[in-house]
Image 1 (cartoon, one colour):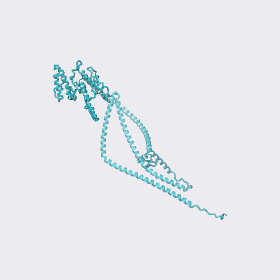
Image 2 (cartoon, helix red, strand yellow):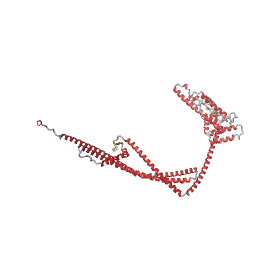
Image 3 (cartoon, helix red, strand yellow):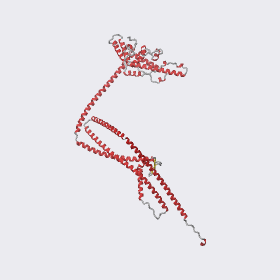
Image 4 (cartoon, one colour):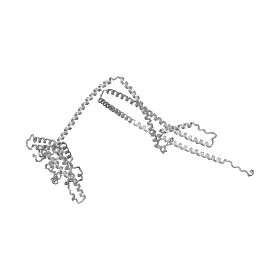
Amino acid sequence: MQNNKKTCYYEILGIDKKATDEEIKKAYKKQALKYHPDKNTEEDSKLIFQQISEAYETLIDPNERSWYDSHRDQILKGTYGEPMSKEEQEQNTYGFNIWPYFSSSCYEGFEASQEKNFYSIYSEVFEKIKNEEWNAYEYTDDPEVESQKYFKPEPFGNSQSSKKEVIEFYKWWSNFFSYKSFSWCDEYNINEAPNRWERRQMEKINKKERFQEKKKYIKTIKELVEFVRRRDPRWKKIEDERQIEEDRKKEEIRLKQEVEKKRKQEKLKQLEEQLTKKQKQLAKMSKKDQVSRAAQLDEEFRIYKEQQLKFQQEQEQLQQIANLEKEKEEEEEEEQEYTDFICELCNKGFKNNETLEKHNNSNSHKNKKKKIQKKLNQQNNIETNQFDNDGYSEGSSLQISQQQQEKDEQEEQNIKNDFKNDIQITDYWNQNTQENNDQQNNEDVEKEEWKEKVIVEKEEVDEWNSMKGLTKKQQNKLTHMQVLKQKEQEKQQKELEKLQRKKEQQKLKKQGKQGEQQQQQEEEENQNNNFESNQFKDQQDQEKDQLQINNDDKQNQLQQKQEEDEWYSIKVQPKPQKVDKKKKK
């Protein structure tokens, strides 16, 4: 092996191109033992060992190996293919031959005393790339390039560069962007186009070629930056420091966790000891203290019950006021000219039967009904015959007949209202019975809740007596344990509720057939009720029609009597007597 001649990495290690990772490792160990400077005293052994290590680092990494396989010929020859004479293409694209710098043979070492050291070689390379990009940026006519930020690349530096400078360099160059136009990659000359259509097609093809070449160029520059970073001792030092710092932080966190764990274990032991002591003290507690606490709880219950009653009374008053306001608003909305559903007492029409029922259940309707009933009772007690016999005449007989007719109409209307009142009274009685049952159930529930509260308060008193001698932290610990117990109890209650629901569902499945029969019976009852209500309405309409007919007949009879009386009075008048003139003389 000669150090000045570029050789393939596979030939250096003596392996095939399809070799596996294990074969590469075995070949590297064999060549390293043979050419290691400590064992081999030849002059070229150091350079040969450097090439062996470089070949191993490249081929053991799958990404670098794939890139090396695709560019192996260009690296060995120092060219990048020959599409248009390689020298011209590289001169236009890179400005120099970039491929030799993808090998560690381009530099001799990392010491500053060496002429071709790592820092001097790659600082020249990146300076050349910067100058090429600067010329493209300065003399370009592309508006997209001119609109971008000013071109300020970071320098490569040397072995004495600071940590910040090294990080900024690799940060900028890993996001590299080219300002070159790549016009030398055009396939067609636009000036030779015979017409506009062909010229546009040529421009599209040329633009596509430029884009592809520019993409390749940027990719190669970024790969060069990555190649240099893997071999830069400054970057390795930064990575080592970062790894040491991460390990140190992890170790600190681990130690803190261990200390905290020990501290918690000690606290738990102390709390357990204190709890055992308090339990022994509670067992010795006298019965007198328990009796006095029970009496105190009874007095508190009495005060609580009085306050609750006051609050309920105030709330009921507010509810009544709100209901009255709501009824007024509903009546104002419903007071329109509807003739299908009418309230005869209030002289109001409604849209449907539901609104009429709401109106009948309202307080305003009930109050008006009571007033009318009082008046009717007073009129029934008063004597109807208050006329003098001397003043009786034909005109008074007409007035009496009209009054009698009005009384008959009022009696018929009272009968109808009484029928309606009977229906409303039954509904009201059913509602009151339901409300009384609900109140009794609520009182039973309140008693049970109060008993549970008394038991809980007794437990809290016992806990308070047990926690008197504890510190705040210990008390917090006890409360935390109590919360956990409560959560367990809630879980058990939920499980019991689930079991009860399952049993109820099974019962409902069995009772499903019975429920269907009940629904059918209810539907039949509703149909019968609707039929009866319709019959009642028809009867009302028929009665109204008959009343109108009777009134018309009575009026016609009165008119006939008046006409007959007038005719009779005219017919019965005495004739004038004739006077003899002779007798007068």
